[in-house]
Structures are given as C-alpha cells and as structure tokens.
Image (tube, rainbow, N blue to C red; front, side, top):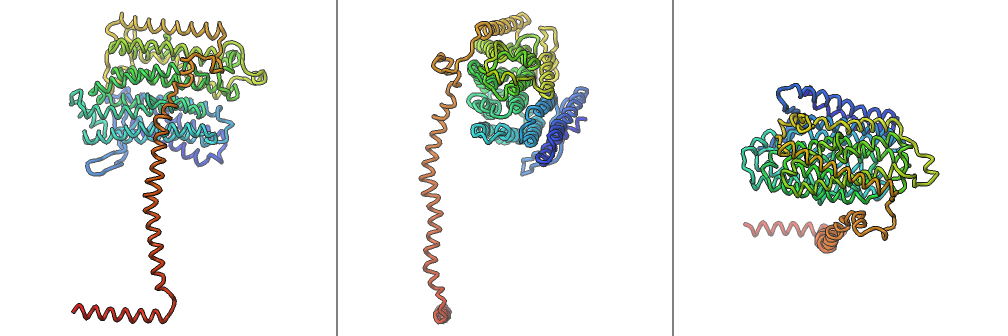
Length: 630
C-alpha cells in the first residue's frame, strides 16, 4: 500500500485538470462530485498508507519515481518520503480538505466561477501534498511555491474587486520574501552537505557540534522562509488580508494546510535546528511576540473573519514558541488540533455569513443561536477547544507547549499564559456578540436568516467531534495517558521531556485553566450581562483600543518605511537610469543607424550612368591594390 503513495497527489491533480477543462461545460453537481471525490480517494489511500506504516517494522520508506535533475554532483530524484510525520500530514490535508470541498459545494453553489474554484482547490491540495511528501528540500520547495501560487489564485478569486486583488498580490509578494530565504538556505545545504536529500543531510548534521555557524545561518534562513508562509513577525500582515477570499479558502489556508507548512518544515528539519540554539531562541522570541500581537489585535476586531484571522496568527505564534523551546511534538500536536478547531471556526463563520447574506460585521449580528442552532453549537465547541478547556483537544496541545516553555523560561511561560487568557476572552467575545443578546440588524434581514444546508452543516458536525475528542492522541502521562502521538513520531522527532514532575504539570494546567475561566466570565459579563457592543465612533474608543483596532498601524508603518522609499528610489532609477541611460543607448543606436543610412542611401540614386562610373572606379581600385601589393 505504501508504494501507492504517488497516487495521493496525482489524483487531486487529475481533478484539477478535469474540472479546469470542463469548468464551463460540466454541471455544478458533477464538478462538485469530481472535485470532492478525488480528495476522498486520496484520503482513503492515505488511511491505507497510515495503517500499513503502523504495522510495518520499518517506519521510513523512500518511494523513488524517477531522476528529475542531474547536473554534475547535483542529483535530485522525484521521490516521496513516507514516515510517521508525512503520514499524519497526509491524513490532515486530505481529510480536512475533503470536508472543506464538501462545504464549498453549498457555499459556492451560486457563484459563476464554481468550476474554476474547485479546480483551484484541487491544485492547492496537490501542491500541499507534494510539499509534505518530498524526500528532499527541492521537491518540498516546489510544493512550497505551488501553494503560494494557489493561495494567490484563491485569495484573489473575486478579482473584480480591486481590494481583493490587492490582498492576493500582497500575500504573493510577502511570501516571495520568505521564499527567497528558503531558497538561499537550500543552496547552503547543498554546499555544506553535498546533497539536499533528507536521508543524507540529517545523518551528516548529526555528527556536527551545536553552535556551528554555517548550520546557524542555514536554520535562520529556513526560519525566514517559515515566517513568510506561516505568518510570523514581520511577515504576518498578508494573512488577515487573505480574508478577501471565499470562506472555504480561509479555512483551507488558515487551518490545516498552507500556514502550517513552516511548522512542518522546521519539525522535519529538527536535527538542524537542535544544532543552532541561538536560532531556536530567536524563533521562541518571535513566536511569543507574534502570539501576543495577534491576540491583542483580535480583541478589538469587529469583522468575524478578521477575529479568526488574527487568532490564527496568534496560534501560529504559539506553535513557533514551542518549536523554539524544542517542543517539536507539542507544536505538531497543536498543528493537528488547530486544524480541527480552526477549520471548524472558519466554516462556522462562513455559515453565519451565508445566513446573514454576506454580512461579516458582528455589530450587526446578535441573537443568532436560535436561528442557527447547528452553527451555534459547533462554533461553541470550536471556541472551547481553542480556548484550552479540558477535555477538548486544544487543552492538551496547548498544555504541552506551555509545560516545555515553563522549563525553558518562566517569563516566557507567564506571557504565554496571559496570551491564552486573551485567546479565551476574544473568542468568547465573538461568540457572545454573534449568538447572544438581541438581533442588531434590520428586521427585513432577520426574516431571511436560516440555517445552512446539510452540505455545509455536515462538515461542521464532523469537525466539532474531532475538536472535542482529538486530544486523545496526546493525553500526557500525568493524566493517565501514554501520549500516542509522541510515540508515533519518535522515529522522526525525538521526545523532549516537559514539566519536571506531575505536581508541576498539574499546577501549570490549573493556572492555565483558571485563567481561561476568568477570561470567559469577564467576556460574559461585558457582552451578555451588560450587552456591550463595540462602538463604530472612533472618538469614543480608548487609545489602546484604537491602536489595536487599527492593527498597531503596522501596514501604515510598512507603507512609510518600506514601500514609499522603494517607490521613490525606483522613480529615480526610472527617470535617470532607465530613461536616460538604457533608453539613451537603445535610442542612440537607432539614431546613429538612421543617420548613417541617410548618407549611404545617396549611393542608391537609380542613375545607370552613376552605377557604371562606380563599377569602373571599383575595377581601377582593385587593379591599383593588386599592383601596389606586388
């Protein structure tokens, strides 16, 4: 079964080709069936691979397809690596991807670009599968670039809206900045180790001593690539703007796939990062700063999708904090649970927006829990899970990260716990503003509110169940479990101990849970008991709320500090270098040719007598030359 792994990415690629060619001729039902069916087939094969790998004594298989690049000592095959890490990623990508495809059938049914949308989704899944299956950094990079391209196409799907097109361009450009760091890192890996194959690079790196400057530079550049793809400071501003795409795109990009690529890459390269403790410390600091910044901004947003977008930024920061302190298992565990509850939350938000006829401002919602019962219950489950209350999935993964952070640095742990407090507050703020109180929209709009069709609610129910029970794969020993995920990943990722003892771990859990409960109570009193609604009048906001609402003016700062100076410099180059030097040389060559031809063309007068004269002059010249050369 493992040898059939090449079918997993190939089948979605076929779906892209079929739906792409038939987008204007196939019925929407057929397009939805093909687009979702190919992902389901890949998911079934992925389950088979996972089960086969579990019963196999050899936990790592490299499936060679063909030689792709061969130039001197550089030999890069197109081959796939099937091991515990990639097997889990296959299940997440195809499983969550299938649910999002099913949801899209109902959500995008009235869109005229239905066929094109499904072909893009299939292509996105293909590239994401290529990224996680590649047995070397080049194949991974091809998938890395592919998901960047597809995110551009999907975020800007409604490109007739100029702001949506600008958001897609912003995502593409900011990802290219990170991708340059990744590409330079790949060059350095080949220069240092003579290969880009994981099977050759990691054993060689294992023989090196920690603190090697070359490895530090390689890992720092890899982290730059991860910052772009996984939206860390300073390359995070594209992610909230990506809300311009349809809601299924938000769920696909922000939950289980593209934004987790950076975490996957670092977890895959854990051997290299363990050799660079300084870089790990940088990752932890930037991850923690991103987690806090995303949470603070999310507290004041009024667009339901923007709240979830900045929540994603914050949760990704948590994952990078875990990576920075060596908690690779904990971070990857959070990738899995985050895939469940964040996909659920985005799809629930899409269900609300669908019911509200594309209204996204929570100030115009309220009292929807009776009109949208399935959406409300499932979104509440997702909110509890992301807040970190036991026994929901987010509690276990977040607790594992916090335990490792506590052992690494107590100050970082305190800040991370405060961030968890903020997470619970802004998530329940969203729930209370959306589903509690009285409806704040127009009476005409209220009459049309209805629950989403079954094609949209079915994925919500499945994801809600996973969000509730998904933590069982990583129950710690302190709670009577054996942390199945840690054992499963042990051939790829070494296990690092967390808290010193059970008593310490119980204390850390209690502090985190109590903080979350306090945050929920505060949010309840403010937004339910006091019926507080965020004001639209900026003059009535506090200074901190105003700064948070405007995202700390980071986009404006980038515009002043980076974009405008670059525009000014490019303007100078255009006027001086381009127009005067480059155009001057080109125009000068044209002018000299034209002027020279004016003289030469006088020789072509059309007078036969003049031509005879020139022939005689030529003959005499040849005779003189011959005579003088003797």
